[in-house]
Image 1 (cartoon, rainbow, N blue to C red):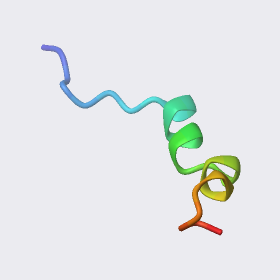
Image 2: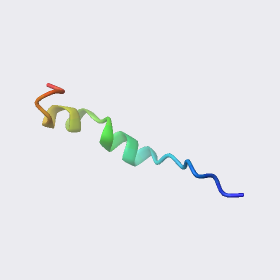
Image 3: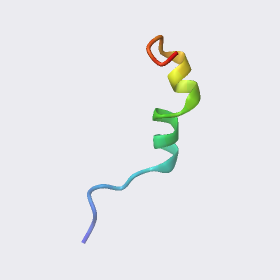
Image 4: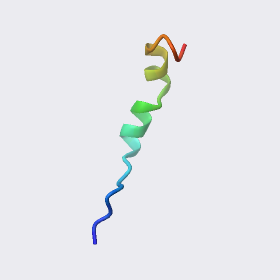
Length: 28
């Protein structure tokens, strides 16, 4: 049985990371 939800730590860090938030004008 294969799980559908396989969270990736790296992807999550990139998505909610500090640099990605600073890049958007909203997260500043």
